[in-house]
Image (cartoon, rainbow, N blue to C red):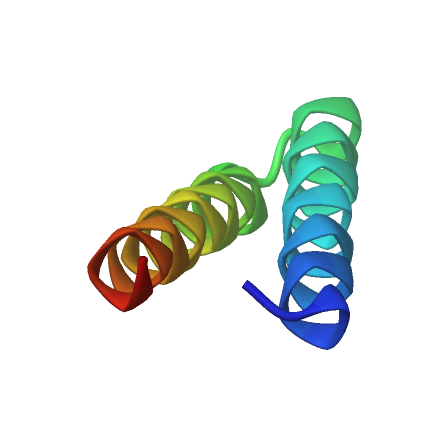
Length: 57
């Protein structure tokens, strides 16, 4: 996994956490759920990169 991919996934995850927290604070369930989805996407991207790395070795 490249350093850029790792950084991008970390940023996506942090953004998702921030969006989820903002949704909780404001009572906006839609924003909260979007944050959770962003975090899930980040986790899937990370898992995909790890699988790619496993096949390269």
